[in-house]
Image 1 (spheres, one colour):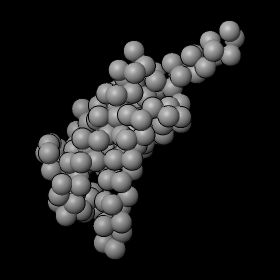
Image 2 (spheres, helix red, strand yellow; image 1 turned 30 degrees about the vertical axis):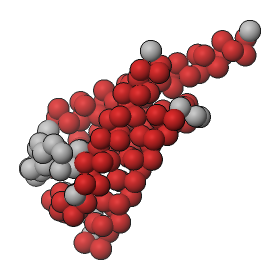
Image 3 (tube, one colour; image 1 turned 120 degrees about the horizontal axis):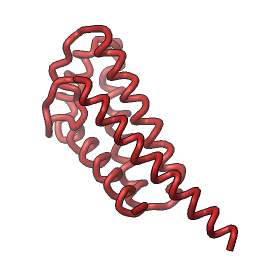
Image 4 (cartoon, helix red, strand yellow; image 1 turned 90 degrees about the vertical axis):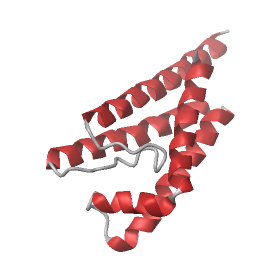
Length: 140
């Protein structure tokens, strides 16, 4: 189960990062609609988010230091869930959440937040299974 979940999470991260990388200028425009980052930080933020997702996806698929990778994924998706909630509570419509870059265009909604909460649960499960198997190994 741990292998399935880490591969699932890794693939989600790779698809999300790849979707942004395919059309980075479009992702910059999406970030602009959030009206949060100063203009001069839009490109660095877009590159940082894209690189983080791609590297985290590779890390999860690689499977080394999986506990750290899973915890990092949980923190990233907690950030996304918090960010999405904040933006929704501000009441300003966001036409595209930017979750998968130009691959999937859907508005930011509470379902986006729920999706990130599900990804947190998956990452937390992977982390739990890592700790559980580490404990079983050290007990033997």
